[in-house]
Image (tube, rainbow, N blue to C red; front, top):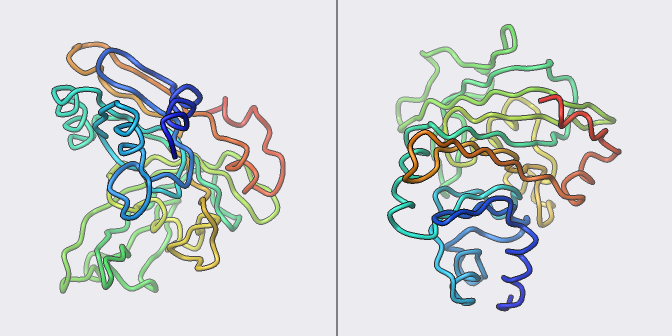
Length: 248
């Protein structure tokens, strides 16, 4: 990618900007930062003469809203908000299965296994659903590895032929949390390379909405929404009515 590519990406993808921060609607296939042997968003901006500091990350195969600070002082403020879980976050996810309830909560602890793979820290057969809540008994949580309590809430927006569109709220922010939680309850995200070796360049996960306190401006809340692109919606396999997004 070139300076012209960054200029186009910035112009097309900016959904909020003020003196200290920028929110971009990141396309799938572009890492936020630190991708080896590849171009990432931070490096692309730097090569065009702009220094940006990510306040959080979304995966390369995930599209949507990413919050970046334009100065270090603001970066510390914004990062602390993510660490303290005061940032409102919601994603859109397209699963490769149907049959989920209208809404639910996944309360499954996560751990990191071999080859740095994230997994549920309990036997798969221990996972049970009661009243729209998926969990495992405390006694079945692994003790030989460190586990991290993780909670994901969801609401079903639309259901088609073999596909479900969800609004997903990660109450905790573990790595790959949404992707692992949905897969382990039997509803993997479409095109997810963590669980489908034949997957392509994007997965059916989109960072949709962010709400955060303006850096250095107590009392001002910023709320933004990144509209999903045609490449994301195409994964539903059918036309999704526009009104389903307005109902959330």
